[in-house]
Length: 113
Image (cartoon, rainbow, N blue to C red; front, side):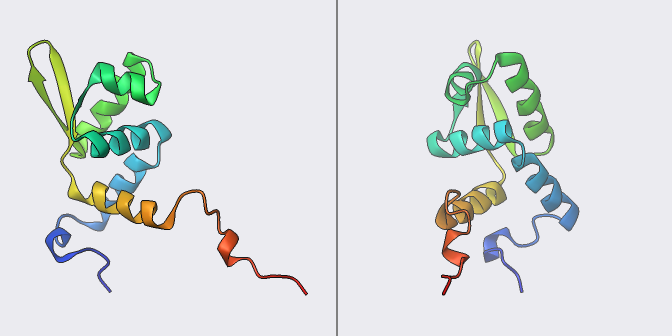
């Protein structure tokens, strides 16, 4: 069974998908990708504020996301803007949003006698 919409099929191997899950498993990288999906693009200083991260730490994680093809950057004057370019990241996060991160499996617990 293929869980990906037709337009996302064939966009990489299991290894690249596993790497994407790894990229999204770090709290700061998850915050960055979530933020970028909500605003389409943002500069490093804006990401640092919205993600509550210092710039050196944020830059290190942005480099990982860029090297893995999750985000891309573009210079506009003195600012560098980032945006999500891997459509699988949006698909994964939309699934998480539908399920809801705060449900915690409460709906799966059985009522006791």
